[in-house]
Structure formats: C-alpha cells, structure tokens
Image (cartoon, one colour):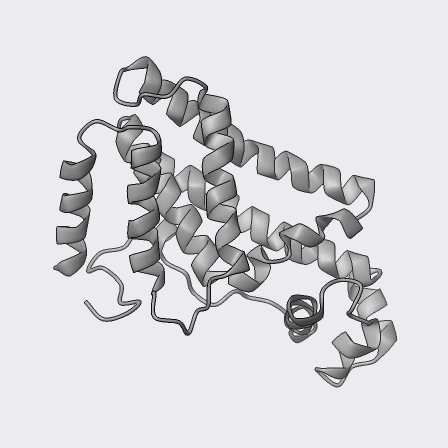
Length: 219
C-alpha cells in the first residue's frame, strides 16, 4: 500500500474530505498556525484573501471569534467521529481500536486545526467552557470504553480515567510534530498508535487484532 492510500472500504468516520470553510476562515487557520494567536493580526488574516477588516468582524465578531470558530470546527468533527467509530464496533477492544484510530487520523489529516489547542488560553472563559465540555465528552467516551474493558477482563488497567487521559494526551501531541508531507502517512501513523494504545491497556488478543488490521489494509 502506498503512503496515505486508503483501505478498500472505509467507514464515514475514516474518510477525511477537505473541510468546508470560507476563504476568510481558511486564511485565519493558516495565519494562526503559522504565527500563533498573538502573532496574528486581523489585517494579516483579511489580507490573505483580499478582504477588509470589517468583513472579519461581521462574520466572526473579532479575532478571538474566528479562533473560537476554528476550535469549534475541529472539536465538533472529532467528537462525531469518535461516536461513530465506537458505535460501529462491538466489544471494548474493537471500540477502543476504532476510537484511537479515528483520533489519530484526525490529528494527521487536520493537523493545523489540532495544533491550535495550546492557544486555548487566549479564549474568553465562555469559549473555553464550551471547548472543555466537548473535550470532556470525548474523554468520557474513551474512559468508559477502557473501564468496560477492564471490567470484562480484556484490559489490565488500574485507573481507567487516568489511562484515558494519558492516551488522549499522547494522541494530541501528534499535532506538535506531524508533517503531512513527511514519510509517515495517516494510515501508517494510526496503525502504530493503535498498537501503542493496545499495549498501554494490556489488551488481550492485541497481536491477533493488529495483525488482522494490517492484513486488511494491504488488501
């Protein structure tokens, strides 16, 4: 399979088509990614698409508003993907694999959006609260799967909630180093991180499951 090549049959939560964004919001994403929140000016954003300063205020209210809209876009997408991924599987191991896979795929395909997370501190308390609630939904879903796996004996973890938080932190860090034009494609990256995650929870049948996934990807 060539770098980044899709598997023969993909579920909706595995497919990453280009995001639908206005030119203005796309310009804001590029500017924030390149210069950070404080290093980006409204004039920089609108200048990239030949618009005026009032146009950003009209559509997003402020620079912070544009930033919050981007964070909402990113967290909204990963939230529906993890829910779909979990619902598509039966049993904690398969659910766990699907969820970790889609989170990593999101980080690889939406690197610029994911990289905005460390700038969260620049948002107002209300915007941070909405973002934190969405993040908590995802964390709780992963924690519930890990707890279910521990209760049924397929995972060996002592504190499921802390394990889930550690796994999400591991996945989130991808945005700090991943390069879409680098040697590692999203699919290869997801397979590696799924294997690491299964090791983290000491999943029984880990080798059988990962071998089956790799064989399916080669078909």
